[in-house]
Amino acid sequence: MRAMVLRRPGGPLVLEDRPLPRPAAGQVRLRVTACAVCRTDLHLLDDELPGIRHPIVPGHEIVGRVDACGPGVELASGTRLGVPWLGFTCGTCSFCVRGEENLCDAARFTGYHIDGGYADYVLADQRYCFELPQELDDAHAAPLLCAGLIGYRALRMAGPAERLGLYGIGAAAHILIQVARHQGREVFAFTRPGDRPAQDLAQSLGASWAGASEERPPQELDAAIIFAPVGTLVPAALRAVRKGGTVVCGGIHMSDIPAFPYAWLWGERQIRSVANLTRRDAVEFLALAPRIPVRTTIERHRLEEANLALERLRCGVLAGAAVLTLDSDSTR
Image 1 (cartoon, rainbow, N blue to C red):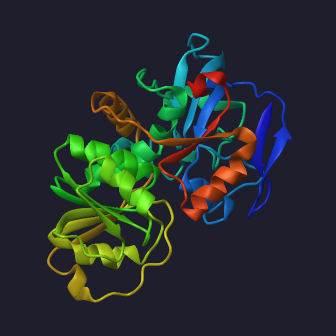
Image 2: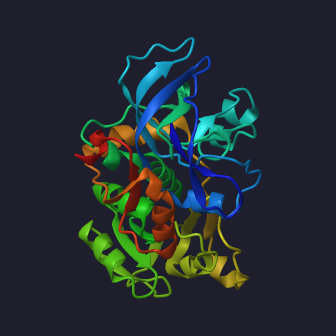
């Protein structure tokens, strides 16, 4: 099988021919049809995450069809499943027992600790796979599995904010605008200065205002979610939210947050982070998405174009999400 492999920090990904993996007990083997490209894949490439092992196959927004099952798994061949970032938790630690499996110290993550979906086939623990909304084809469903799930969890962390600011209008935010508008929230979109395509996309999806990240919105925000991995946006967002408001940092990695006056935090404003996701998040969001309905904006690439897709993400020229498509089912 083909796989795009990160062999060393900094990359690039290398196309390799690998043996077809065999599923162990509790695992399924999926024939990958689509895998979305996530900013976390860039953090992996740039060696910004701890404990990366090399070689590793990235990709954690995977759509595929069951091709083989290991002992203890009974799924019909051809069943469509999605594989997200969370690939394993211990189930017994205090975090898991409290329903906070996303914080499990023994957790393993797809495309980081476990070979991911930048390949023709992938192995996954069946307990961490999910059926997907039939309303979306494979390529359009793929971004739901991280951009959608992390966005949904971040929105929950923001609380019942009527006026919501989103910093960084990419894969996650373009989905979250649709969810927030469905819930009756007003959305304010913040982009890189001069990024009219992203601002236009945000407003076409229902944002009432779009502007540069250093601008102040026309109204105080109840909450803000930061998807761009830029620490300087935290003080900017704090200045944009009202007293008692919340700033949620939605990424797994962010550049350092600069010092800022305590007065910007005072007034019971709060800063919090979102870490990973739980299976409950997936069940809830994947049931909600077709009711809205969420429509993803994607740019398709072939598997061997993974480096190009990552570079386009790095340069901020994508509208929505990049998706690697590996099968004719993904191109409908």
